[in-house]
Length: 206
Image 1 (cartoon, rainbow, N blue to C red):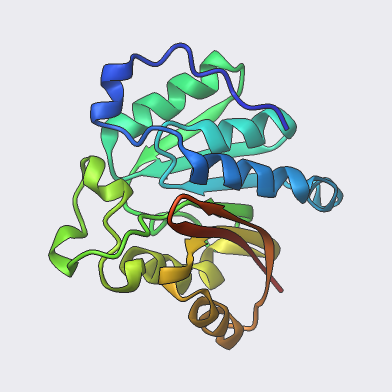
Image 2: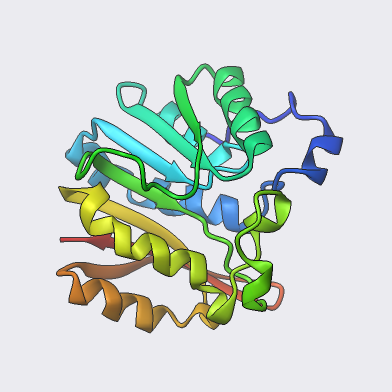
């Protein structure tokens, strides 16, 4: 998978929108590692929740030009940047300024991607709509993630796949158990130590 061009983005814009970092590129690497699996699925609809700059959903759209790509972000400026990143790389992307994925039709998405706000913080720091929404994860760094986990059975197509980035502080084994209770299997696609963080991408599917 190609890394999208980002030279259209003014550095000052990253004061308001999460700048692509190691976690963003680890998620792209996970999708690339699973490329044959995804091609065999021949996805019709893909959703990235919390798209930020749009590099991940754009990379997906570049690899799957026939897939209808959508993204959401609670930060309006992130929605604008995601749309620009996609357009700059000739990817058609529909963006929605909304919280997570609550308003979408049930069981429509063949692929859902989420690089959540995973930093362990006080609960009071969660729930913003500015750049803090990209990192403040609350208790266990999982308060936002757990809300989306509860939506996955309603939003993911029956044969769909969900890619979720986590760090060890998020207690991935608990996420695996939560999704197991919903009838899903989980596999670690890729894992990487970045400075003081152990980052990994879970693949969740039936």
